[in-house]
Structures are given as C-alpha cells and as structure tokens.
Amino acid sequence: MGSLAQNARVVVALGRRSIYQTFRRPQLMAPIIIFPSLLLAVQTGGAGQAVNLPGFPEVNGFLDFMLAGAMIQSCLLAGNSGGIALAVDIEMGFTDRLLAAPISRFSMVLGRLAGTAALGAFSAVYYVVVGLIFGAQIEEGVVGIVLMIVFVTLSAVAFGGIGAAIALRSGSASVVQGLFPLVFVILFLSSAFFPYELMQEPASTIAEYNPVSFIVEGVRDPVISTLTGSDAWRAFASIIGIGAVSLGLSAAALRHRLRTGG
Amino acid sequence: MVAIEVRGLKRKFGDEVYAVRGVDLDVAEGEIYAFLGPNGAGKTTTVRMLTTLLRPTGGTAKVAGHDVVTEAGEVRKSIGVALQEAALDPLMTGRELILLQATLHGLSRSDGKERAERLLDRVGLDHAADRRVGTYSGGMKRRLDLASALVHSPRVLFLDEPTTGLDPVSRKAIWEEVQALNDDGATIFLTTQYLEEADQLADRVGIIAGGLLVAEDTPTALKAEIGNAHLEIAICDGELERAEAIVADLGKPLPSRNGLLMIELEGGAGGVAPVVRALDEAGLAVESLDLVEPTLDDVFVKKTGRHLEGDDEAAPEAEPAQAEA
Image 1 (cartoon, rainbow over the protein chains, first blue to last red):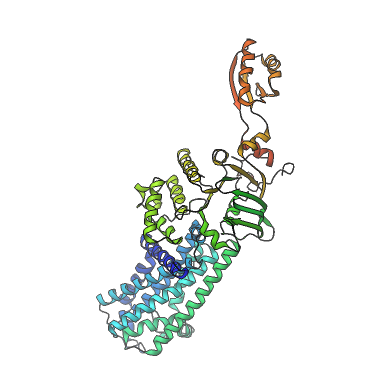
Image 2 (cartoon, each protein chain N blue to C red):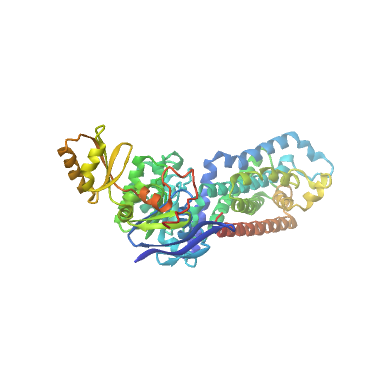
C-alpha cells in the first residue's frame, strides 16, 4: 500500500476514534449539541421580537436568523472539544502510541480534525432538522442545505485546528478548556446572534470585520434569501484563511513538541 | 547480530538538566535486556530516545540496524512499544485498540482482525475484547498494551516498566508472556525498578543511575562481583563465640549482626552441610539458619551507594557512586 493511501487509512481510523470518543464522553458532546440548542431555544423564545427592529435583515422568523449562529457556535465548540480530547491524549500518553508508529506524524492532527469535521457535518444536519421541525424556512432549498453543511464542516476543521494547536503547544486539557469562554466572546462580537448593523460601537465594527461574521453570513445566506455569491465567497475565503493559519500553527506546535519532547 | 547499539547517548532538558549523560550499550538479537534503576535515573528517557519519541542531544543509537534520528521511520516499523502506565484510551474497547494499532502499522483490515483475535486470545483477553478499556483491571490493561505492541510482529520490543503497580499474580502473568515472546525470538528491552523482575527475566542487566550506566552484565555475574552467599545462623544463648570458633575454618567469618553467627561460604550452598555438621558434632543447637545469596540490590548499593527499592521518594535523581562508576 502506498504511503499516501496508508496515511489516509490512518486519518480515517483516527477520525472514527475521535467520533466514538465524543459520543462516548458526554462532556465532549454537550458543547456541540446541548449548549447551542439551549441558547437557540432561549434566544428565539425570548428575543424573537428583535426581527421587528428597524435595520434587521428581512427574515421569516428569528429562528431562521439564529440557525447559522447555532451551527457556528456548535462547530467552534466542537473544535474546542477536539482540542481538549487531543490534550487528554497527550496527558495520558496515547499520542506516544501514535508517534511510535510508522505513520506521518501530522496524521495524528488530521485524524482528530477528520473527526471534528464529521461532528461539524453532524451538527449542521442536526440544526437543519431542528430548524425545519420548528418552522424555519430555507429559501435556497436542498442546494442551500448542502452549502450550509459544507461550510459548517469546513469551519469545524478550521476552528479545530486552533484547538489542536493549543493542545499540542500546552499539552494541557485544562488550558484548552480555559478557552471555552473566549468562544462566546468571539461569537458575541460577530453577527452570529445579532446583526452587526444594530450593535453599538466598537462591537459593531469588530463584528463587521470579524471573520466569524463572514462565515456565519455565508451559512445564513441560503436560509434567509436566495444565494448571494459574495457572501458565499467571503465565507469560503474566511474558512480557508482561518484553516491555513490554524493548521500552520498546529504543524508548528507539533514540530516544537517533537523537538523538545513536551 | 546487534539489535540495539547505543554510543554516548545523551539527552539534556533546558540548558543544564541532563536526564541521560552518555550511555553505551549493545543488546544482541534474541536477548532480554533489563534496564534497572530508580525513578528519575534516565530509564524512560533512554527508551523514549530509542523508540524515536525523543531526539537525543548527543551520541548515536541504532535499533534493528537503523539510526533512531536519520532512519526513524524504519526504526518505528521494526519496534513494538508498550509504554509506562499503559497509555490506553479508556473509552475504546480492547478489540478497537488492537485494530487501530494494526491500521497504524499498515495491516489490512482482514489481517488486523485476524491478528486481533489471535493476540487477544494469547493474552487471555478474548472474553473482554468488546468491553471498554476503562473497565479493565491494571493487569488486563498491561496485557492489552503488550498485545497491541505485538500486532505487527516487531523484531525488537520495548517495555517500559511493564509491571509497575501490578499485583504479584498479574506481574507473574506478564513475566510469563515476556518470556514466551522471547522464546519466539523477539529481542526485548525492558525497564524496571523491580530487582526480582530483572533477576528473573533478563539475560543481561544494565544498571542506570543519574543518567549513567554504572554496571552491566548477566545477573549472576553482577551478583558474583559482590561475593559469595553467606549463612546467618541463630545459636542458643551464650554459645555464639564457641560457634564462631568451630566454623571459622569452614568459610570466611563475617562480623556478627543481631546476635547471629555470620559466615561467607566460598562454595555457595554446598558449604552449608559441613557447617551444620560441625555445629551438631560440637553439641550446639541451631535455632534457625538462612543461606543469603547476594542480590541485585547489593549490586545496586555497591555501584550507587543506595538501595534501589523503597528509596525512590528520598532521592529521585540518583547519582552513581564515584568509586564504582
């Protein structure tokens, strides 16, 4: 078997393990499904009248607007959970098992991210189903749903790279876990839960240029309107940019760990 | 043929802390080599360098004929590694772990399944194969770790403290398995802080302290350096001096300790009978008699100036005794 094919097999096997791990450890699953679902329920129930504010985008309901935010919240937290799981692997020595095997060492990171990607896809499907059950209308139909799933899946990889980089650099699950509140700061300083046009300064400007806003709007676009090329491209470019930086940081952190032994 | 060849191996952490200060050793193919030393002596650091998990900061090492730095990939193909504390995922089942290990080593799905069945059976875990590892006992975890290290039939097997923390029964089961693997032709490099383990299993023992190899030989030869076995005899009250005079010509008298007659026997166990006979003929009643063989701990004390077992907490970074190093 060629080296590339063998490494692909390893990435798939490690990705599968990462998925089992998440489903078998409720504390890793909760941030992906339960927290965003609760926030979605509370916000759509309690702040639904926000859609009537002057300047609010034209939507069928607040749920339509919020779905993209819940999905991106879910995949940011999936990335964080993936980082925690990787740090736990480092702490308990499981990564040594992988590093002592004749595989590309970055496969360890890619395997973890493959699992995070699968969880991202799962969460996208979950929120689409939840949205449809509770009356959301996806304007772009099936094509829009597919595009949302693709964006959320790729976002999970991009955000997962940040979690992986911090896990590899620190080797500590509690350090990665400590980033949990930061996820909410990033989300609330984006257009995930509220249009940036209606925010106060400086939050409005920060949210306008926050790459997470571009991704959220790319995911939201097929729900609330017919597809806009510019939103989709900006989302795609943001995902690629964040992904390139996070994977680069992960590779550097892995190199540092291998060089120094910790 | 040499399975492991190490020359001047060093590892420094930071600017000043040397975990390994320059180790030279050779392990022949088919040999069981025990690396004996207390916590902090440099055993695990050495194993991590030999298994390519840590880059040396000095010296060279070859495993299965491949350099651990420049041919690390080839080394990884040739070795099996069971690390300290059994680094197992508690959420995986035993079977999943072996199958993952088989994939890591490039076995096909069907070969991996077949190997998993055979290895789980071999280490007596077939009944628990589909249970999560988190539910396993310590001994079961070590056996699973051992099985996973064997999935690709490695030429050289590294076992880092394979029985630490295990009860005597589980420890014996691991020893039997290690011996069986060696009988099948595997070269085994194991680290241990248990004297009995090194004594029972190893063809040769290397004693490491303070990052230096301070002694290396077969357990028998190492113990022979210390001297012969000695007898410790409890004699009836008031008769110690007379007894010492009677047996003086039958061995090398040693200073009495705790009221016991002490005599070193040059002929080993064969010298016991003449001593007992002489005391009996003199009408002296023997209350108890122990033949004390030199132990690896005696060797360790001679080489490092301290005991190996039960001394870890006091001095985690053991320094070798200058006189013997």
